[in-house]
Amino acid sequence: MSQLIYPLTKTSKYTYDFVTSKNVKYTIYLSSLSHLSYLFIGEDRLNEKDFYYLIIDRKDREVSPSPPDVFIKRTVALCLFQFFTDNREAVIVFNYTNADGKINAKRGLFKRWFDEYSTDSVYKFYQHDFRDVASICALYRRYSAHVNFVDVETKIQSLIIQIATDTSKG
Amino acid sequence: MAENTKIVAHTDEFVHVKSETVPAWIKTLELLKDKIIEKLDSGKANEPTNLSPHKDK
Image (cartoon, rainbow over all chains, first blue to last red; front, side, top):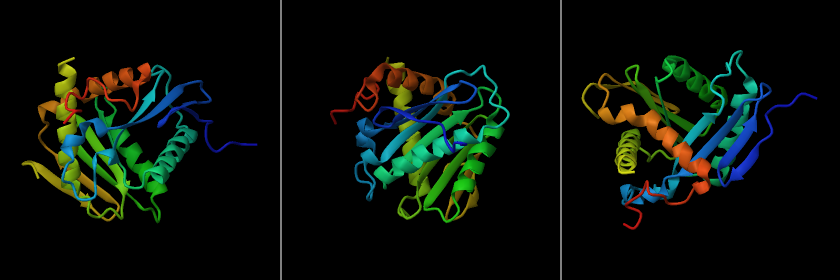
């Protein structure tokens, strides 16, 4: 019988592992940004616990991802659906750069993934491209119309600056 | 909205913004992601870390 997704192993509250048919391990991290709560005080309905940082980490970067593996996107999508079921007001934030020279492919890939699952969807996808250097994205429920994308952008920027400052401090 | 930034698409489902300028902080993102992964892999996911000196505020 064919499978629709790869089996998921939940390693912490919102961390999942799966292994592809090419024996490549992926980890999906959804990490709360609640420790940066001071950034969100006073937001209308949004509060610090609503912001999560998403990382999709391929552990073996030497293995070619082609041909496209549809099971990967299905597995990631399932994780995100489950996450939004538990966290209806969440804003998921993720980013990528052009460090591997494939930023345009990534931009197209994530948009196609969203389009594929967005038919009659309640989700909204926000993408900010900085030339060919980097992109920052946010995913959240459409009914949260009060979530102004400029505010989301400002918060993302504040977060990144804060994390950069903190990391440089060690 | 910042200077040199424009909205490419704005629908109920998709907002696409492009900036011609690249702020300095954006270039550190990939390095930061690796550091965050390191922290999460060390089993400290969802716990306050020294990434958050403001946690007591």
